[in-house]
Image (cartoon, rainbow, N blue to C red; front, side, top):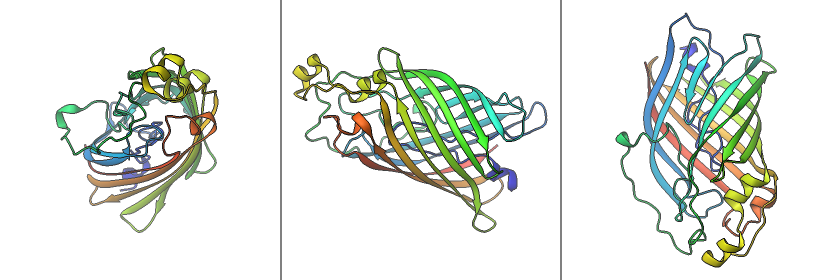
Amino acid sequence: MTKLFALAAFVLAAASNTACAQMPATNPMPDGSRDMYIGLGLVSTPRYQGADERERRALPVLQVQWSNGAFISGMRAGIHLSRAPGLEFGPLLELEPGRDAEGEGGGLVGAAEVRSILVALPQATVSGNRLAGMPAIERRVQGGGFLNYYLTPAWRFTGSLLYGAGNARNGMKLELGVQRLALALGPHHRLALDAGITVANRRYNMAYFGVSESDSFASGNAVFDAGGGLKDARLGLRWNWAWSPAWMLASSVQATRLLGSARVSPLVERPTNLTVSTAIAYRF
């Protein structure tokens, strides 16, 4: 049962579309072995970063960790290279969700595009859509690395740097945070807390929050030059309920506040948003 909770919570639906699942901690295992969770749930999230209207969709869940340090967690994949206690680092890949003219795709959470097991859910009716006339943003695979440092076995500082977002593939973001892992509430319940900030370069913010002259002509939004700097701050809570060593209910809520030039973008309808998710997962 202890090992069941040792992995960081694997459901995180972020309104800021940052990490879609917490990066699993280094988990020493016998050579050739692996831990895998797979499941399905629901998520309620803004249609895009800064949207007022929400949508509900199915949430596929996937987390796998291998004995060689490789892992997949939601839309992230990487390799733990450090063997030093209290330190984790390595290369990291992440699928950055896209966004169409209706704002869809901005809240994609869970395993990347597992459409075969998704069930279509009612979508919010779009009215006064600020993205109408704005160019679609393609999904991009970003590359970079991560570095985590443990103050204690339950507290860790986290950091990741990723590059490649936006249609021009030149958006970069730095995520910094602190996490409290596996806070016990009885024998079957665990809580995890996290807080953090995201810093983005100008090209990332222009892709998601900027409005060029041509975009302004097509959409009616005012021209807006989004600068780099602080993009958002977030606060999250996760609750895991283990029914057995194999079955778990994982739920999360995260509040995200857009900051800096992102907050005052004409595309932003609500700078503060909540994302809520719950999923049932099975451990293989």
